[in-house]
Image (cartoon, rainbow, N blue to C red; front, side, top):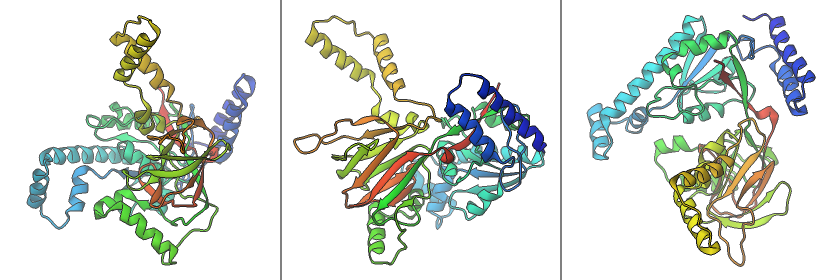
Length: 434
C-alpha cells in the first residue's frame, strides 16, 4: 500500500507546478478537485489513488466480462442443445465455428487478466452483463473496474460508476474489435505489464466528461429500460415503451417525481426521438439558454468528446464523394479550375472531419439534428453545433431518451430535459506512460 503522505506529496507537487506556471484556472481547479475528491483512498478496499508518478495499488478488482455473440445466442436459445443452436445459427447464415472460436479467445484473455491480478495479491470478482453479480454492491466493493471486451463493455461498465472509481478497459479480441476506449492491443497479451505500470505510478489520470440529464416534467420511469436485455426477450421495443407509459399513467408503475436527475451518466451520447426509427420525431430545442425552436427530424444526438469519435462523427463526416461533387459545383459556378485530385479530396475531408472531434475531458457538448425537416413551418437554423447546455421539450407520442444506446427512458409529449456536463460526473480512466 502507498503511504498516505506519499499520495499527498504527489498531488501537492502537481498543485505547486500549476500554481507556478501559466496554466488556466480550470487546470488549477481540476487539481484541487481531484486532490479533494481522492480523499487518499480508492473504492471499497481502501486502495490509495495514485497517478503521475504515484503508484496505484488496488486491493479489489471487479472484472466485467462482455457477453460474447456466442454467449448471447446461447442465452437467447437456452432451450436448445448445442447441436440445435448450431443448426439455428447456420440456417441464419452465421458462422457457428467462428463464433465459438471468438468466444474462446475472449474467455482465455479474461482468464489472463484474472491471473495477472491474483499474482499481485489482488482480490478478484468476475461479473457479466445480465448476471446478478453485476450490481451496486459489487461495484462499491471494488477499487478498480476492468471491463474486458470492447468499447461496448467499457461504456456499459462506466454506466455503473457514480463516483470517481477508476476504470481500465481491456480489448479481449483486438483482431475483431477496435476498442478505442481500451488499452492498446499489445496489453491484451501482456496485461501484467499494464498492471505493473499502474502499480509503479507510470500513468496519468484521464478524466472523461459524461452527460447529465435533468428531467423537469413528464412521466419518467424510475429505472431505465435496458435495451440490450430486451434483445434477449425479443419483444418490440416500441411496445415496451408504450406499455410502460400506460402503466405509469395508471399508477401501475412507479413514476419518479420531477425535477429529477436521471440515474445514468452518458459517456458517449444521448439520443432523443421516437422509438420507431422510421417515425418523424417532433420536439422543441434550446441551445445555451436560447429560444425554443420547433423541429421535426429523425431525432437528436448530443455527444461528449468521447462520443465525438463515434456515432456523432459517422452522422456528420464528409466523404470523398461529397468533397468531389462540391468542388465540381464550385468550379462550374465560379469558373475556377481547381484540380479535384484524390489527395485534395483526402485533405479537405480530413480537415472537416477532424474539426468534429474534441477531447474527452472538454466539458463541451456536440449536438446533431438528424435529417431535419425544413419547410415553411419547421426550420433547423443550426442543425449541428457545439454547446454547454441543451434543453429539449418532447412533442412525441412514443419517444424516448436513450443513454449510450442502452438505457432508455420514456420521453413523451410535455417532458422536458436539460443536458449538460458537470465536473463531478467525469469518469476516471487511465493513460499509461511509455
